[in-house]
Image 1 (cartoon, rainbow, N blue to C red):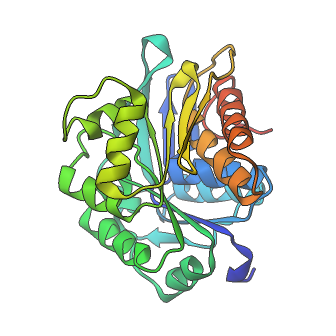
Image 2: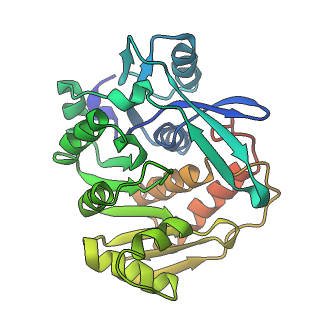
Image 3: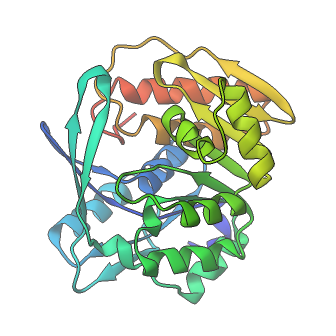
Length: 285
Protein backbone atom coordinates (compact mmCIF):
# COMPACT_ATOMS: atom_id res chain seq x y z
CA UNK A 1 0.00 0.00 0.00
CA UNK A 2 1.40 3.38 -0.95
CA UNK A 3 1.98 5.99 1.74
CA UNK A 4 -0.24 8.46 -0.13
CA UNK A 5 -3.28 6.36 0.74
CA UNK A 6 -3.17 7.31 4.45
CA UNK A 7 -5.01 10.49 5.38
CA UNK A 8 -4.54 10.20 9.17
CA UNK A 9 -1.48 9.08 11.14
CA UNK A 10 -1.60 8.22 14.84
CA UNK A 11 1.51 7.93 17.01
CA UNK A 12 2.31 6.21 20.28
CA UNK A 13 1.52 3.31 22.54
CA UNK A 14 -0.01 -0.06 21.66
CA UNK A 15 -0.66 -2.58 24.39
CA UNK A 16 -2.93 -5.12 25.98
CA UNK A 17 -5.45 -3.86 28.52
CA UNK A 18 -5.54 -6.53 31.21
CA UNK A 19 -9.06 -6.30 32.65
CA UNK A 20 -10.65 -8.34 35.44
CA UNK A 21 -12.59 -10.10 32.66
CA UNK A 22 -9.55 -10.77 30.44
CA UNK A 23 -7.12 -9.08 28.04
CA UNK A 24 -8.23 -6.82 25.19
CA UNK A 25 -6.15 -4.78 22.69
CA UNK A 26 -5.70 -1.12 23.54
CA UNK A 27 -3.62 2.03 23.64
CA UNK A 28 -5.14 5.37 22.64
CA UNK A 29 -3.34 5.72 19.26
CA UNK A 30 -4.36 2.21 18.24
CA UNK A 31 -7.94 2.71 19.45
CA UNK A 32 -8.25 5.93 17.47
CA UNK A 33 -6.83 4.28 14.34
CA UNK A 34 -9.25 1.38 14.73
CA UNK A 35 -12.29 3.64 14.96
CA UNK A 36 -11.09 5.89 12.15
CA UNK A 37 -10.86 2.79 9.96
CA UNK A 38 -14.36 1.74 10.97
CA UNK A 39 -15.71 5.18 10.06
CA UNK A 40 -14.31 4.98 6.53
CA UNK A 41 -10.96 6.71 6.92
CA UNK A 42 -7.48 5.41 6.04
CA UNK A 43 -5.28 5.65 9.13
CA UNK A 44 -1.75 4.39 9.72
CA UNK A 45 -0.28 3.88 13.19
CA UNK A 46 3.34 4.50 14.16
CA UNK A 47 4.31 2.38 17.18
CA UNK A 48 6.62 -0.36 18.45
CA UNK A 49 5.91 -3.89 19.71
CA UNK A 50 8.05 -6.63 21.19
CA UNK A 51 9.24 -9.79 19.47
CA UNK A 52 6.78 -11.82 21.49
CA UNK A 53 3.43 -13.57 21.19
CA UNK A 54 1.61 -10.54 22.60
CA UNK A 55 3.06 -8.36 19.84
CA UNK A 56 2.23 -10.85 17.10
CA UNK A 57 -1.30 -11.27 18.42
CA UNK A 58 -1.80 -7.51 18.58
CA UNK A 59 -0.59 -7.04 15.03
CA UNK A 60 -2.70 -9.93 13.72
CA UNK A 61 -5.79 -8.69 15.54
CA UNK A 62 -5.80 -5.33 13.78
CA UNK A 63 -4.57 -6.65 10.46
CA UNK A 64 -7.59 -8.94 10.39
CA UNK A 65 -9.83 -5.88 10.59
CA UNK A 66 -7.97 -4.19 7.75
CA UNK A 67 -6.16 -1.65 9.96
CA UNK A 68 -2.66 -0.84 8.66
CA UNK A 69 0.14 -2.28 10.80
CA UNK A 70 2.97 -1.65 8.31
CA UNK A 71 4.54 0.99 10.59
CA UNK A 72 4.82 -1.21 13.68
CA UNK A 73 8.49 -1.29 14.64
CA UNK A 74 9.72 -4.44 16.40
CA UNK A 75 11.91 -4.45 19.50
CA UNK A 76 14.20 -7.42 20.17
CA UNK A 77 14.67 -6.65 23.88
CA UNK A 78 11.56 -5.07 25.34
CA UNK A 79 8.15 -6.67 25.61
CA UNK A 80 4.91 -5.50 24.03
CA UNK A 81 3.08 -3.03 26.25
CA UNK A 82 0.65 -4.10 28.95
CA UNK A 83 -1.70 -2.12 31.16
CA UNK A 84 -3.52 -3.51 34.16
CA UNK A 85 -6.88 -1.72 34.24
CA UNK A 86 -8.98 -1.61 37.39
CA UNK A 87 -12.63 -0.63 37.19
CA UNK A 88 -13.64 1.91 39.86
CA UNK A 89 -17.05 3.16 41.02
CA UNK A 90 -18.98 5.44 38.62
CA UNK A 91 -17.51 3.56 35.63
CA UNK A 92 -14.09 5.19 36.02
CA UNK A 93 -10.90 3.27 35.26
CA UNK A 94 -7.50 3.25 37.01
CA UNK A 95 -4.42 2.14 35.05
CA UNK A 96 -1.15 0.45 36.04
CA UNK A 97 1.05 0.91 32.96
CA UNK A 98 4.03 -1.44 32.66
CA UNK A 99 7.32 0.41 32.13
CA UNK A 100 9.48 0.19 30.14
CA UNK A 101 7.70 -1.29 27.13
CA UNK A 102 8.55 -1.55 23.45
CA UNK A 103 6.50 1.54 22.57
CA UNK A 104 8.80 3.66 24.75
CA UNK A 105 11.51 3.25 22.09
CA UNK A 106 9.97 4.32 18.78
CA UNK A 107 12.83 5.55 16.58
CA UNK A 108 12.88 7.90 13.59
CA UNK A 109 12.88 6.30 10.15
CA UNK A 110 12.78 7.93 6.72
CA UNK A 111 9.58 6.07 5.90
CA UNK A 112 7.90 7.55 8.99
CA UNK A 113 8.83 11.06 7.88
CA UNK A 114 7.39 10.45 4.41
CA UNK A 115 4.24 8.93 5.90
CA UNK A 116 3.58 11.95 8.13
CA UNK A 117 4.37 14.47 5.40
CA UNK A 118 1.72 13.07 3.03
CA UNK A 119 -1.05 12.75 5.63
CA UNK A 120 -3.75 15.31 6.45
CA UNK A 121 -3.97 14.81 10.23
CA UNK A 122 -1.35 13.71 12.76
CA UNK A 123 -2.73 12.52 16.12
CA UNK A 124 -0.52 12.21 19.18
CA UNK A 125 -0.79 12.08 22.97
CA UNK A 126 1.28 12.88 26.02
CA UNK A 127 1.75 9.32 27.33
CA UNK A 128 4.01 8.29 24.42
CA UNK A 129 6.45 10.97 25.58
CA UNK A 130 7.19 9.34 28.95
CA UNK A 131 10.53 8.09 27.53
CA UNK A 132 13.14 10.33 25.91
CA UNK A 133 13.44 8.12 22.82
CA UNK A 134 9.77 8.15 21.79
CA UNK A 135 9.46 11.80 22.87
CA UNK A 136 12.33 12.87 20.61
CA UNK A 137 10.89 10.92 17.69
CA UNK A 138 7.52 12.57 18.26
CA UNK A 139 9.01 16.06 18.29
CA UNK A 140 10.83 15.39 15.02
CA UNK A 141 7.61 14.20 13.38
CA UNK A 142 5.64 17.16 14.74
CA UNK A 143 8.09 19.49 13.01
CA UNK A 144 6.88 18.22 9.61
CA UNK A 145 3.32 17.16 10.47
CA UNK A 146 0.23 18.77 8.84
CA UNK A 147 -2.80 19.41 11.09
CA UNK A 148 -1.65 18.36 14.56
CA UNK A 149 -4.21 16.83 16.93
CA UNK A 150 -3.23 16.46 20.59
CA UNK A 151 -5.18 13.97 22.72
CA UNK A 152 -3.78 14.91 26.11
CA UNK A 153 -4.44 11.50 27.75
CA UNK A 154 -2.78 12.23 31.12
CA UNK A 155 -1.76 9.15 33.10
CA UNK A 156 -0.02 9.47 36.47
CA UNK A 157 2.87 9.55 37.17
CA UNK A 158 3.79 10.45 33.57
CA UNK A 159 2.89 14.13 33.87
CA UNK A 160 5.59 16.77 33.41
CA UNK A 161 4.50 20.35 32.87
CA UNK A 162 7.41 21.49 30.63
CA UNK A 163 6.81 18.62 28.22
CA UNK A 164 3.02 19.07 28.30
CA UNK A 165 3.41 22.77 27.52
CA UNK A 166 5.71 21.93 24.62
CA UNK A 167 3.13 19.51 23.19
CA UNK A 168 0.29 22.00 23.72
CA UNK A 169 2.22 24.68 21.85
CA UNK A 170 2.43 22.45 18.78
CA UNK A 171 -1.29 21.55 18.64
CA UNK A 172 -3.82 22.81 16.13
CA UNK A 173 -6.62 20.75 17.71
CA UNK A 174 -6.80 19.73 21.37
CA UNK A 175 -9.01 17.05 22.90
CA UNK A 176 -9.06 16.54 26.67
CA UNK A 177 -11.46 15.50 29.41
CA UNK A 178 -12.84 17.67 32.20
CA UNK A 179 -10.24 16.59 34.79
CA UNK A 180 -7.41 17.29 32.32
CA UNK A 181 -8.91 20.69 31.53
CA UNK A 182 -8.96 21.57 35.22
CA UNK A 183 -5.39 20.34 35.68
CA UNK A 184 -3.93 22.37 32.80
CA UNK A 185 -5.79 25.58 33.62
CA UNK A 186 -4.76 25.32 37.29
CA UNK A 187 -1.29 26.36 36.11
CA UNK A 188 -2.57 29.87 35.44
CA UNK A 189 -5.44 30.76 37.81
CA UNK A 190 -8.79 29.58 39.14
CA UNK A 191 -11.73 29.50 36.75
CA UNK A 192 -15.38 28.80 37.42
CA UNK A 193 -16.60 27.54 34.06
CA UNK A 194 -15.55 25.25 31.22
CA UNK A 195 -15.79 28.16 28.77
CA UNK A 196 -13.36 30.25 30.82
CA UNK A 197 -10.93 27.36 31.10
CA UNK A 198 -11.03 26.70 27.35
CA UNK A 199 -10.42 30.35 26.59
CA UNK A 200 -7.32 30.55 28.76
CA UNK A 201 -5.89 27.49 26.99
CA UNK A 202 -6.72 29.06 23.63
CA UNK A 203 -4.95 32.28 24.59
CA UNK A 204 -1.95 30.64 26.27
CA UNK A 205 -1.19 28.16 23.50
CA UNK A 206 -2.87 29.57 20.39
CA UNK A 207 -5.11 26.51 19.87
CA UNK A 208 -8.19 27.39 17.84
CA UNK A 209 -10.10 24.10 18.10
CA UNK A 210 -10.58 22.65 21.60
CA UNK A 211 -12.90 19.81 22.62
CA UNK A 212 -13.68 18.77 26.19
CA UNK A 213 -15.33 15.40 26.81
CA UNK A 214 -17.64 15.42 29.82
CA UNK A 215 -18.50 11.74 30.24
CA UNK A 216 -22.22 11.18 30.72
CA UNK A 217 -22.74 14.97 30.44
CA UNK A 218 -21.73 15.03 26.76
CA UNK A 219 -19.09 17.39 25.41
CA UNK A 220 -18.13 21.02 24.79
CA UNK A 221 -16.34 22.28 21.69
CA UNK A 222 -14.77 25.60 20.74
CA UNK A 223 -14.58 25.77 16.95
CA UNK A 224 -14.78 28.57 14.41
CA UNK A 225 -14.69 31.09 17.27
CA UNK A 226 -17.94 29.71 18.70
CA UNK A 227 -19.05 27.47 21.56
CA UNK A 228 -20.87 24.22 20.85
CA UNK A 229 -22.48 21.96 23.46
CA UNK A 230 -23.87 18.44 23.30
CA UNK A 231 -25.75 16.88 26.22
CA UNK A 232 -24.57 13.37 25.35
CA UNK A 233 -26.46 10.08 25.03
CA UNK A 234 -27.89 8.00 27.85
CA UNK A 235 -26.64 4.41 27.57
CA UNK A 236 -26.18 1.34 29.73
CA UNK A 237 -22.42 1.32 30.35
CA UNK A 238 -20.36 -1.86 30.04
CA UNK A 239 -17.06 0.03 30.58
CA UNK A 240 -15.69 3.41 29.51
CA UNK A 241 -12.35 2.12 28.20
CA UNK A 242 -11.69 3.68 24.79
CA UNK A 243 -14.81 5.86 24.72
CA UNK A 244 -12.74 9.03 24.50
CA UNK A 245 -10.66 7.52 21.71
CA UNK A 246 -13.79 6.64 19.77
CA UNK A 247 -15.06 10.18 20.36
CA UNK A 248 -11.87 11.62 18.87
CA UNK A 249 -12.00 9.30 15.85
CA UNK A 250 -15.62 10.23 15.26
CA UNK A 251 -14.79 13.93 15.45
CA UNK A 252 -11.87 13.70 13.00
CA UNK A 253 -13.85 11.56 10.55
CA UNK A 254 -16.60 14.18 10.45
CA UNK A 255 -14.10 17.01 10.07
CA UNK A 256 -12.64 15.21 7.07
CA UNK A 257 -16.19 14.94 5.70
CA UNK A 258 -16.50 18.74 6.23
CA UNK A 259 -19.58 18.38 8.40
CA UNK A 260 -21.00 21.28 10.40
CA UNK A 261 -19.75 21.75 14.00
CA UNK A 262 -23.00 20.51 15.53
CA UNK A 263 -22.95 17.37 13.37
CA UNK A 264 -19.28 16.81 14.19
CA UNK A 265 -20.01 16.96 17.91
CA UNK A 266 -23.14 14.84 17.69
CA UNK A 267 -21.44 12.02 15.78
CA UNK A 268 -18.45 12.05 18.15
CA UNK A 269 -20.72 11.83 21.20
CA UNK A 270 -22.75 9.07 19.58
CA UNK A 271 -19.71 6.92 18.77
CA UNK A 272 -18.18 7.46 22.20
CA UNK A 273 -21.45 6.47 23.87
CA UNK A 274 -21.76 3.34 21.76
CA UNK A 275 -18.27 2.13 22.71
CA UNK A 276 -19.17 2.61 26.38
CA UNK A 277 -21.88 -0.03 25.90
CA UNK A 278 -19.29 -2.56 24.70
CA UNK A 279 -16.48 -4.52 26.39
CA UNK A 280 -13.05 -3.00 25.80
CA UNK A 281 -11.87 -0.22 23.54
CA UNK A 282 -12.08 -1.91 20.13
CA UNK A 283 -15.18 -4.10 19.84
CA UNK A 284 -16.40 -5.38 16.51
CA UNK A 285 -19.13 -3.27 14.93
